[in-house]
Length: 417
Ligand SMILES: Cc1cc2nc3c(=O)[nH]c(=O)nc-3n(C[C@H](O)[C@H](O)[C@H](O)COP(=O)(O)OP(=O)(O)OC[C@H]3O[C@@H](n4cnc5c(N)ncnc54)[C@H](O)[C@@H]3O)c2cc1C
Image (cartoon, rainbow, N blue to C red; front, top):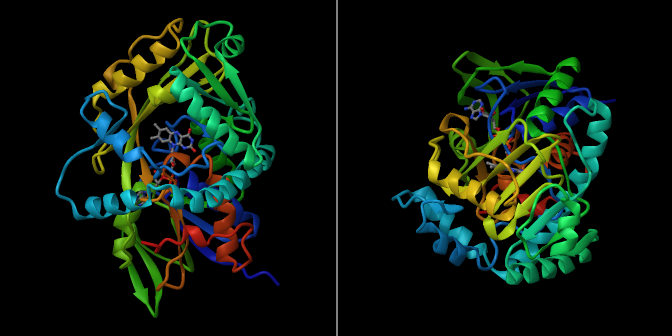
């Protein structure tokens, strides 16, 4: 006999909603609490890639020196605001410690497992909730301007093939053939054919609507401010709208994970990594393929006539301040790679920003809290929350039901630092 559990999910971003999706399939009683109304946030304005191609964790060899090189420029794609902050220093120390070839070799297969699982599950989810979020399965281009960058991408393509991914190595003319309407200024590209993309805002809206029809309860505009504990369990969630009794808790508040975990007495290392984007509603002669502009360190995603450009990783704490010069860096890169693209620099009020939840080793946190029986932590997906949302949701559902998980989750232990 199935036991029906009362599950409270804190945070209705892509991780919270995907967790609700798999838990409702098992007939549990679910409430999602979010301090907003789930119409904006990191899960909405991102680039919308599902990227099995991104099996190399963010903490990897060369990233530190690359970061320092870029930090001196105001339009750079990477920035750490220097400040005396103990959390940031601890995070930085562990990020540095994990940015080596041996750790990458150890962690990449785990990232790959979760990415591949999620890639498979997103098709099932689309079939179930309806094809209303402009999903296209044509792959993603890693576009390179410099031959040196292209050589490196070709090398990564070899690694990708070892993980079973399908890739095409393209020289300039072959890439241009994929984009017949827009002049390109690149040396070449790798097309990762297993990648796909969709409109993440539309996906979030569709998923929330679907969950409502399945009796998932949404307690919106409600901020969690604390917890009540009894016998190694959280007995109630305290919010600005009152107290909620609960059975199981899924903690998925994105970049606010350390703050909420701390209220439970759990210490987690995570930094918000701010990124920017702008969406053009109508582009005359639009590009056809989503692409990461590798040496430009930004990305472009087309959906029919519309186009999103985005990027940057700014470690400046929790804030939504927009630095126009960083958006300028993204815009200039897009124009540099696609000189024929007719887009203007966006007005300040139309620039979106979102906070990626970044762990020190580039792997997410997925697993039970060590000393609290009814809390499961799901977060820290950094640049890959959309890519790993479905797989994470499935794992969350399996862990809560004490089932054997589809993939090995030992590397995602939330209390590994
Ligand atoms: C520019 C940019 C481009 C990106 N592109 C991609 C991409 O192409 N592919 C990809 O896979 N990923 C991408 N990402 C990363 C992806 O967007 C994130 O990994 C993902 O959105 C994180 O989801 P989340 O559910 O963990 O957090 P969030 O989406 O931040 O959701 C957390 C929720 O918790 C709520 N919350 C927080 N605190 C409280 C509280 N106290 N009480 C109640 N509710 C609370 C918030 O309101 C929020 O709704 C990109 C990110 C950026 C910034």
